[in-house]
Length: 57
Image (cartoon, rainbow, N blue to C red; front, side, top):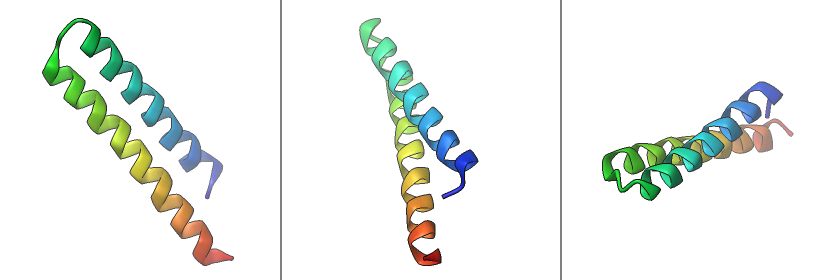
């Protein structure tokens, strides 16, 4: 897994989590869903990179 892709995946996870929690605090369900989607996209990006890395070895 390249360092750049790993950092991008982690950044999406952290940003999504922050958006989701802030939106829940102010009762904005649509924004909370967008934050959850961003977090999930980061998790999937990380899983994809881990899978690619396991086939290289």
